[in-house]
Image (cartoon, rainbow, N blue to C red; front, side):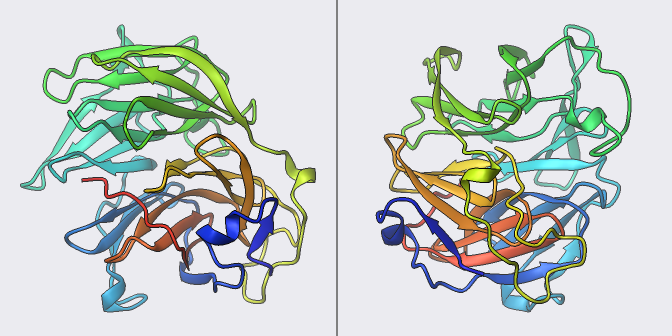
Length: 320
């Protein structure tokens, strides 16, 4: 399988076209939420439909370094670390956001907004001052991706959560299905993907954490605009051959300000000024990703049944 769908030659400065894409782990049901611990040197990720959070230490080998650290995870989805290195997780099965404390205990941070259950918290980021931002579509209340149950909220929102007082504030309620989110490198903007509208929106972030000046930053091209190709031997049964499935999902900036976003065919790459450079192609539908290893030059990709890894030329950003 060709690694890159190049739409602008600048993409080849970010990733070499013939870089090998490795499938380092497989056998899961729906991988999501990968996050790299920069000091303990491990990758944590969710298997949503497998109902677990896994920890993998690459130095220990493929399976020897893999541990199920949170079975019965209530369909955990997105993960991140706060500035103290505590794992924060969205649980779409229980409609909770939680934090793992240093002693291993679990603190529930959010469950409701104005006495109504959250829909199904999806993805989460933490600002440098500790404020927590998360998206809350109703995807986890469907039979396909979660536990069927009617939503109590009349909207799918983007929320801000104070890490100490646990005060929750609604920042935006006009998304069809908010999904991935990330801050710009300088934290002056917040980017949020809207899966149903196939675009990425951006907001200006005020000093108190609220959002203003909403606008569409980039469109994520639909399936027929990504050149299809076959998938390599060994890809699990049931993965469509040559069909660039995928929707706007996880998104993050690298250290040079290039925005990566999951979408049809794999991971779409944009320059800081929203120029579409092309797609890092994946043999399974990519849902999220992170940078890892000592130099943060390994891009770890959560794609349905597997975790993939490819080396890039521009490092990511440590989460803490």
